[in-house]
Image (cartoon, rainbow, N blue to C red; front, side, top):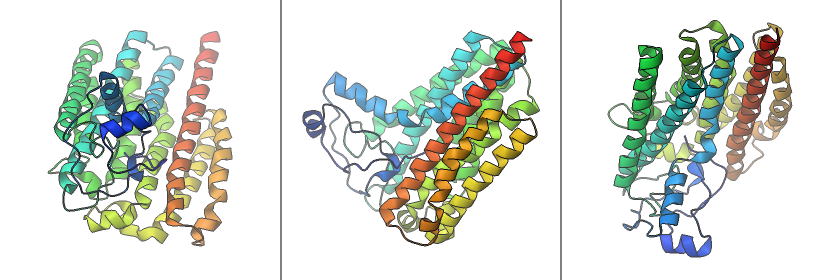
Length: 348
């Protein structure tokens, strides 16, 4: 997944970066201007700069979309009397490793596909800036996937084979988002798969590791996260419609066109708010989630301007920022709400 918060030059040498900022630029993801030029061959010579380049390659600004669902699954299980801190730690580390491997693999395969003949809006930007070579990023992805698989083996030995199966599903889904021959992210399936993997699979999988089973409670807890993590990916693709169409990347937004994509965005936000209210009223979601109606309302307040076409293309980046902010608010409310349910259950 890319992130649209900041713009970044498409080509900068490691020396320029070190002298001007002392570090890699802030992650920008989908906001990278198109560039077809190959990056400089040299990687950072400074160990400090190299470490920062690898850190940026993991896109740390997006890791809340892994941490939050894992915590939610653990907290739901804890509220039912199932908690092993060691298993919780390894579940989180394995999930973060698979997410990091996914981001590196996506950067690599996007660059390989686009190099030399098409626009590239590129992820962490470490390839385009020359801080890491494409081959280094490919190897880094497999190291992360390998670590995640080993964690899955350990968890399976402790809790049962579904833990490993879910981990391998996460690796395959992350890899084939952009890797041939599947490339489902190019076929309009990105939002569905990312929503399921970064929402339902992480919550239910984390719950399973603790409880050795699955529950409707865990599945329901994942639903707001399923919707909003998919919305983040969708929002980031809206400002790339022209580039995606030019390269044959048939995202959902590219299929709808800009006007239709913007309409769906605000409808999506409204539908998620309705889902939250319904879940709380039914007693299936924590009441603390009602606080997320405030950022949702702020987002919807911008709808008339966008739906009326009174915006510049650059304003489309704000849709991604609003979606990420709404996700974080919802995640915090879920974590806080289920933590309170756990405390209440423990107190009897």
